[in-house]
Amino acid sequence: MAPPASVRRSGVRHALGGFLVWREASVILVAVLLVVYFELTNGNFLTGDNIVTVSQFVAAPAIIACGEIMLLICKEIDLSAGQTFALAPFLVYFGAKFGLPVIPAIVVALGICAAIGLAIGLITVLLGVPSFVTTLGTYFLITGVTLTISRGFPATPPGGSFLAGIMGAYGYSEIIWALVIVALMHIVLRHTRWGLHTSAVGGNEIAAAEAGINVRRIKVGNFIITAVLAGFTGIIEAYRVGSNDPLAGGSTIMFLGVASGVIGGTALTGGSGTIIGGLIGAIVLGVLQDGFTLQGINAFLFDGIIGAAILIAMIANIRLARWQRGVSR
Amino acid sequence: MSAAAGGSIAPDVQSGAEAIRAEKIVKRFGSITALNGVSIHVKRGEILGILGDNGAGKSTLIKILTGFHQPTSGRLFVHGNEVSLASVDHARSLGIECVYQDLALINTLSVYHNMFLNRELRRPPFGLLDHGEMRRRASEALDDIGVGVPNVEAEVARLSGGQRQAIAVARAVYSNARILLLDEPLAAMGAREAGLIIDLIERLRARGDIAIIMIAHNYAQTLDICDRVVLVQHGEITFESHSAETSVEELLEIVRREYRAARRA
Image (cartoon, rainbow over all chains, first blue to last red; front, side, top):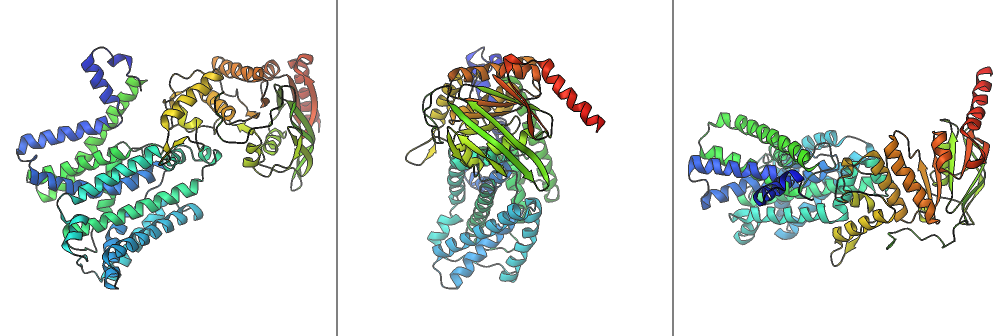
């Protein structure tokens, strides 16, 4: 997009203007300011150990966000992604227990997650149940299944330490997975027909159908993508922690994913959103969580501060987005 | 025009050849007769205006021509061959395309994505979208039919109603529509915006290879733009004329008689 006339005056302002007109600019700015703030107040925010910790806060919501962003763009949502997240490592565990080698067990578990996404999608598009309601149902349903098969007890993820390391136990492996998945999903959204059709369906369902796009297929496909990504996140998180927890994930991880997307500029009204924005949104949330932990904020206050921070980040983001629209008009 | 995107190319017939002909079309929905023996025809390079009140049967006629409804009886000829349009896609493959005013475009997508929606250009080896080529061809195609859009990367939401309509028409033409149905192309548009669309329609007529059927309410504009007009009333064509041989007054008089008859009844 050509830079607006009002910022074309000098080189520096040109560069600054060009950056600010970029879609994800406002969130990046918020993330950088937060990092600077925590580094100045703590002094040990940008240490190697702490960067590993932050990356682990960031990775899981960033991957969940990839799926939820695709759904939000085509005007759907999966509230039960956190439940699929908790179920998947138990599916791997039981697959291995029944004699499958670990990698096939992971593949089978992800296949079952895909089936969950398929079921959610079909109920939503064929029976006309809003996905908010469909996934409210699966939210409880999947929790019930996880608690039943695990009998409420944690379990140890199967496989040797090498595999565990690749999957999540090595400090950086989770964020590497997240970055690879973010890169792939960015390509899917921006550079494939699937992504363009997803945006088209969310932007104007009737016009998309008029153009010959199979709206139901797009929606069901994105439910499957979301469920598989949620399941995969649950599995790598279990390997990182070294334990399957039947009460892991849940609505917290799902809402962190959705919040990452929304902070990153995905519209709840559908039709627009960016995967990179979702990653940066996850970074903002991760920096907040880690930064306030370093500052020794009272645990009871913690959620309240995170909530306020999300609101402030969102308000700043929306104001800046309005301003961007103003100058680029 | 450069390369064609999708759709089969209609046989190359010179201007003046008949593009579409409907003969004695009857359409009943249960006990209601929506169309009662309507016949129309349009040549390439010609514009036919269809006038009529709401419920007169205009939209039923359009839906039959676009393959959305199948007629109860009657015959359809496209480029001289008798056809039975099984679906909207079938009609589209014969070069018949309808541009609806509001449903046409996706506001959150860019102009060039709208132009290429569901017939995207891709490049090997992974079949990823070829954004550069689509941008280039979209600009070309729009320039080609004289639609000035400042930037094909702009979101459609930022454009005016007239520009949006023009892009929808350009998209249909670019995808090889040779029989173009325009549903109320000038409704709810200011004079300047309407002027933009009228210019576009006249440029398309000048190309000589496109037949246009325009549904409209405004008698003055319709007579101005169209070569011929037909008036549809209660499922029948009650009046047909070359635009030059009739007037707004004559059309109004026919409709006025109809109202009086309806009030007496």
